[in-house]
Image (tube, rainbow, N blue to C red):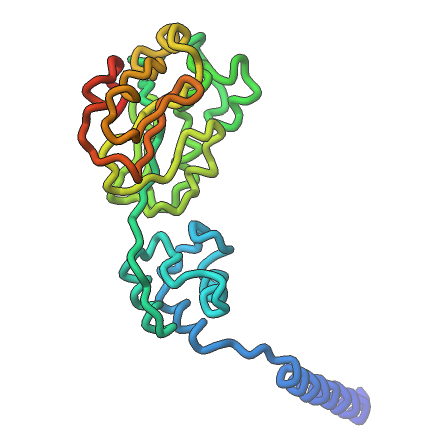
Length: 263
């Protein structure tokens, strides 16, 4: 064995390693991206769920946007007012008031109340229903399919399938919007936490067709619209819609609804 050759090889490898380390060190300093200390502080305050409910790709994206002035300090739906206030202190601005929101499923067609055209056995996924006859076994083509795509999407265990339809736990819901995006029927929307009345139906079919498919569906009779003293509810495309900004929670619409679908 040639000891000299081994020593020379070791020296060459060591020298190359030193040169590479020196080069990387210089490059790291030259191309270093300065990070605003406020961004790191905000990231430390955010809950870290990375749910995307704020509209950005994770908490780091939101933190960067807040520092750049592209997002308000109370943009995080999970943290709510408390986190917004802390971020406001970091940024030196007032967080302001934000109304808490929760997800709401616009369907009351439980197993007992909604009709079924056939029995289905197969892949239990709502998106997969687009490839089966009539868009799924339920007679109502607008109703909740009940296969839990929203349940799988929720990072907070705030929505579950109960008696064939999705049901939201208002206290656990953080209004991240994951379930809204996951529902292929567009049945889920974010509403004010303290909303007094909501229409738990989304069928745009005519009244007679609704009654054939579901015993509790909105039939578009306009009684709620005619009796609302605040002009807060209107029937559009055979379905009633409530303007939550106008609604005062008097309950007249719910009393007049013959299908008791306004809850």
